[in-house]
Amino acid sequence: MDHKAVKGGQGRAKSGAAISGVVLGIGALVTTSLARPRPSSPAVARPDIHAEFIKYASGRDSITAYIAYPERRDAAPAVIVIHEVFGMSDFIKQTTERLAQQGFVALAPDLLTRRGGTPAKTDSAVALIRLLNADTITQDLNGAAAYLKSLKAVRGDRIGVIGFCWGGSQSFRYATNNPALRAFVVCYGAAPDTAAMRRIQAPGLGVYAENDARITANVPEAATALKAAGRDYRYTVYAGVGHGFLRQTDKPAVADTAWAAVMRFFRDNLETK
Image (tube, rainbow, N blue to C red; front, side, top):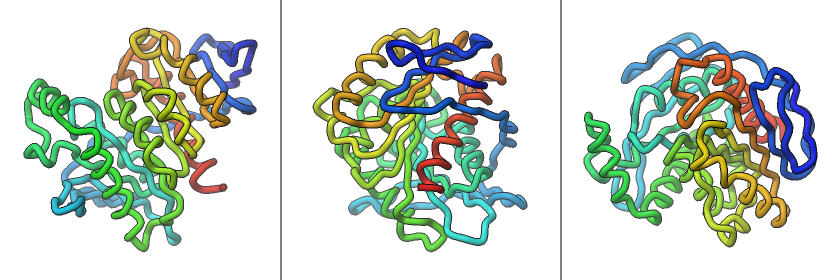
């Protein structure tokens, strides 16, 4: 699907499937359909990936995480996957596997580990997420980055981050706190304050939903602030979908288009640069 920029940094695809915003000079986005990942299990071994739960150090504690490796002969770039407000879930494990299928080592920390791990009940997970300390989250994400850098299978200078919902906001915030990141992706997450965004060094990609005004209405302002700071931030508002559309199945073609844009962005910024 081709997207073209118009006045104000936004454009609409001819099919009406997406609205694109561009900060700094950006070419057209070309997307291709990606197969949906198979359901994950606690340990997955397939011809294309290997996935399992591990623990990594964060201060004096250990954080549980789900890691997926691609099958490739050389060291791979890596992506930290930040879960939604629901904590660790099948969707997050599948996302980690999806990234591995595309050639990345992907690591998804359970940021509720210090609270006993993600509980079975969604309401309980949401309540625990609200108790997390921002500095501790940053520490645990730094621990994830350090763990990835310690792996011989990872190119330690090519690490990115992606987050969804609450995790999208955390991905945006983490980009303000880790200048070594090479790329960050925000999936329907809120932006940090303008002063914090000036600390961002990595290029970013935003994935937003048309029927999600609570988040999407604030995107142009954040994009303008990033542009004023000289930062590269591209975003797309996908038409006809709402918050959390990447985990939903009602409009798979729209989700596939968004996933393709994400994978292309990571390849461009982690593989080829």
